[in-house]
Image: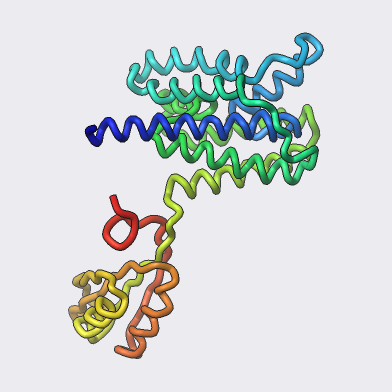
Length: 287
């Protein structure tokens, strides 16, 4: 099996699991609590509740999600080509499928705070998996991409934020400001969890070390920490002296030991420590 095929199968699996989580969050958490968190899923909840008197139980979430997405997908095919829509189309169909077959399990039992917390965590995990597969589920991010096609001086993220804000405000008008405030909690959690999955959850630390004893310190760090060290040529702008700055990435728990080793070797060393969201390679996440 080729690497390309493995990646395709992996992406299909990620999209399938991700959309299932998203559907569960919408149908079992957000909808029972009337939390409008933006996107077409939020519009679907609004439409379902507004049509309860016309249709028994209201228009199903799966039907609304599919109907809202179809015209924008056709427009996207015309503007950006069929390949652009393959993954998004599959993800959108899978989300509607899960919305129609998954049973409603109200895990928050009417508690708005728990609904915001549970829904945000589950929705964030689902969106993150779909994004990792380089797909979207259509909705406002698809509309934002289409608008950005004509208004290129605006970013897709900015347009999507405006669209989602309008949906949340509409939800606040229908269901009250309190509901909108809880929805904001859910939106924040969703974005944080999704970003964590996209950017990587294996956090590390990177250290830049300016020292008068670079060779000796590099040997100590490589021997005691078993981590690679890279020398970067630098120049002190005040003194004009050439220096060799050391660069080293370690696990979070190892940064204290690195600073102790550096201090023992050169008490006058200048150390800069920064966060690293994800590290690929030997000793960290293998490719």
